[in-house]
Length: 216
Image (cartoon, helix red, strand yellow):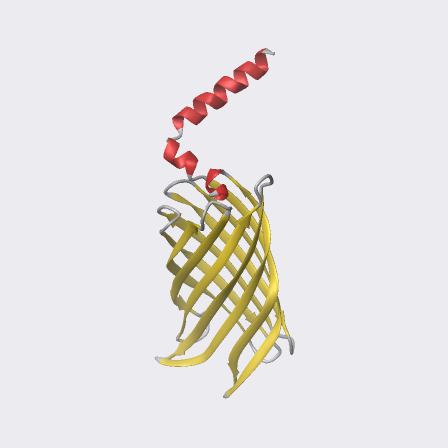
């Protein structure tokens, strides 16, 4: 069939234009996670703990030395508290050690008060194979700084750390993930640090992963 031959030649030409190292490390991953969430925060002057369930959807597209990572996280906690994060990051560097830089939009909604702010984000992530069984490890750390809130002279800052194990099935583009993510945020009002909060999320879930690097 002529059209099939032409399509094959076009794909071959496209593949030839992409460096072999980039193809070997290409990956497209869609992840959906749902797990228990614990938040420790200050309400007024008293420290309180909130528990509930959080859900995360992530999309990662990358080649050998670059890509894009988008993540949406939301949690419904007890006593009417809700937390939502939206991250968009540019990824630079190989999988074993990459730099991520982007923005985080964070919202906290409660019965007593609500806040929303945007943070500049930068950090490091390492993803590495563990043997040849399809199991991979991941560890990352990020700093978030420089967000000015619209009301008053207030700035927000934060830290985030995450670790996980990912297992890719041999014959299907499906993987499962288990890990833990910890976040710490604080708001500074007129130079005085206030309203600190910490949140821990147990990440349990999986998704679809395509590309040669996903099978390592």
